[in-house]
Length: 328
Image (cartoon, rainbow, N blue to C red):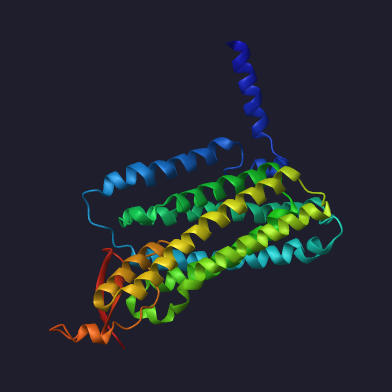
C-alpha cells in the first residue's frame, strides 16, 4: 500500500511541474487540482444544484447583468485578439519553414501571459451556463453547450501548463474574433425586443463558428503536412477536438435551421410565428435572443377577431414566453 501511495504522490508531483516555473506560480496554474475543482463545481451547479434550487422559483431577472456581462466579453475578446496579433508575430509563424519563431525568455513569458488570459476567459465563459440555470432555461444546457465549455477550460489550461506552442496562438486569435461577434450579438439581444430589427444576421452565427472550425482544422493539417517542429500530441488533440466540434455544431445547425424551414413551409398564421419563436429560443445560443421574424401571414389573420397582422412574436428574456410586439 505504501508503495502505491508513493507512486501516486510521484505522479501528482510530476503533474504539478509544467514547462515554466513562472507559469506554475500563476493563479490556478500550480497543479491540475484547482482547475479540476472549478470544472467539477461548474458541472455540479449547472446539472444538479442549480436546477434543483430554481425548481420552485421564478426565473431571475438578469437583463442588466447580461448586458454588462456581454459588453465586458466583447471588450475582453477585442483586447485578447489585438494583443495576440501584436505580440505573437503570427504571420511569421504561419509562413516560416518550420512554423516557429525564435524568442527570448521575456518574449515567451509575454506569449504565455496571453495564453493565461485566454485560459481565464474560458473560466469566465462558464457564466453563460450559470445564467441559463438562473433564468430557468434548462433546455439550453445541452450536451454541446456543456461539453464545449468544459473541454475548452481543461484544454486551454493543459496547453499553457504542459505544451505551449505556436498552434494555440492561431486558434486563440480565431476564437477571440468569433467571440467578439457572438457576444456583441448577445449583448444587443439582451437589451430588449425593440432591438430585434438589428439582429437579422442571427442565422449566420452558427455558420461563422463552423467556418472557424474549418480554418482551425485546415491550419492543423497544414502544420502536420509541413512537418512543423511542434508537439505532435497537441496537434493531434487539436484536430480530434475540432472534428468533434464540427460534427456537434454542424448537427445543431442542421436540426435548428432545417426545422425552421419546415415550419415556415408547412405552418401558417400566428401559430407558425409562435413555433418559430420557440425554435429560435433554443437556437439562440442561450442569451434569450431570437432572429428577426417575418410578418405574420395576413390571410390567416383575417379569420381572427383581433387584428394581429401588425404584430410579430418576440421572446420575453426573463420569463421564457412568446409575446406579441407591434411592428414599427
